[in-house]
Length: 173
Image (cartoon, rainbow, N blue to C red; front, side, top):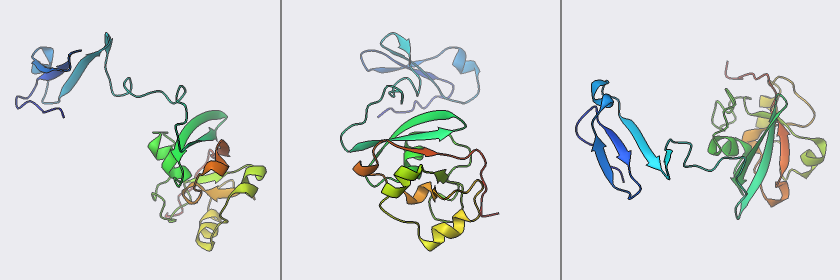
């Protein structure tokens, strides 16, 4: 939608009318990096100001809430039916360092989560042999440990709380 201007060193300004106009100024003296400044209802625009914050977000239709707990801090996230817990973390831009290193291919144990017993019993699928093999390599293993890439959320799991252990081991080496 936005076209990049051919001249380097220019920045773009977004005006309330929606028009895009080149602005030459201090940015022209900088290197060839593009600078985007803008105005959105009288406020400075940036990549995060246009998106609703997770704290104020309400689950939409066919979206389900997942609560992640890591080192005592709670993170609310939302996902659609069929999304794995790993998908939910990625799609909600939660930054858990090293989480899901193999991108859900069952080749590591970095998406290890601990599910409370009551919710563990509600999980529709039981761990397969490959998942159990990967879990054997995870730190802080419990009876209710699972890999986040193997748990798909659904209406039955709406509001599920899972704990992400502070220590992580990448089984790939």
